[in-house]
Length: 478
Image (cartoon, rainbow, N blue to C red):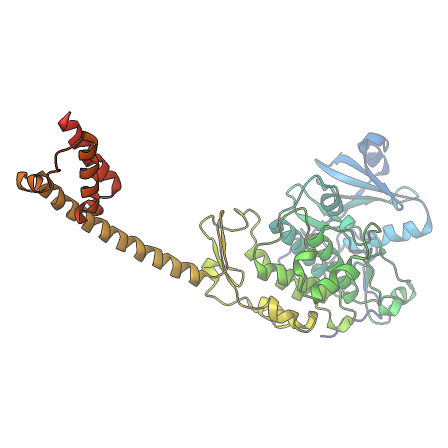
């Protein structure tokens, strides 16, 4: 598939628009939204004069404060002064005044009665994805990680589906914020650009982004495309899977893509997963998550998938790994998987999206690695034991059942023989026949014990019954 080119005249509305017209890609059923305009004095009062105790965070582009405004909590962004920062603020207003989505950190309003514009955003109460992944205070489940990756992918797809498409240019875990429902949202549109053919603004804007996430092919303005965002998303996905930072000088190699992709090509998929938690139990999920990331960071831009394809793959994978599971399974009773698929679906085919992804798996593997990793394997998990083959386990179960039935039949036959033998022992004729010769008492006991052991009926009764019989006869003599 080709990629969208960014050479052209922008068709954006002005930044002062407060009731933007919906983009051509929006449906007519979408509710219109309005960007509010606030007085600077109201924003200053809501933050107690931009007091430190209201400060949420700060960076090179300004400060963010928490405030209660218009009946809800909001995040107020006070940019730093400077022409470059002012241009980014205008760009955010320009982009977000035309797009609203539950997957984005939406713009609530802004202030224009001061020298620097102040932006008002939705408040995200759970920090950033970077903090969640690298703070070490909370380990996300695989269901939650896949869901967050899917939510970010949908956010990027929303941008790319605009007309003209919007390219974020700075997709990274620090720009993914977590709301009160622990859903991921994409924010910080200061570097975002609308791409259209021969747009002077795009052609005159130098490449920008964050080291470690930046597409190495994006070296000149005319290299910008939607596949630039796809590369950055692939780095983010590797970060979610591995728990490693995009650039970490504490590891060798420090770049996450230089470390992970050779392992994926060799089929060593287990090595790339976050060691702080157990990897996904489903081998199909393990394999295809790695493949999605590898496809996104391909060195050939044209071979990278579109975000629409990525959303389709992650949607299918998210159905195999629920948010809440018992030991990695949807159902505590669901302990069997065939080629990684849950028991209730192992007789069904993979979704078309995953079938397409499965067919392209060999593209990211080296030589014979695909043969060992795609071999059909049937597994049975339990709390105590791991069996590699379900049919072997079933065969062993049948053999054990047959053995138990045979043992039961033998036991019944033995008991019947014992009963008949016991009645023969109690008859006077039989007792006289086996009467021990006269002699010392100890000799009598030994003779009776030895006779009892040599008799076939006594052998069936077992040694313990023979001892009991001899001891009872000794008591009778006493």
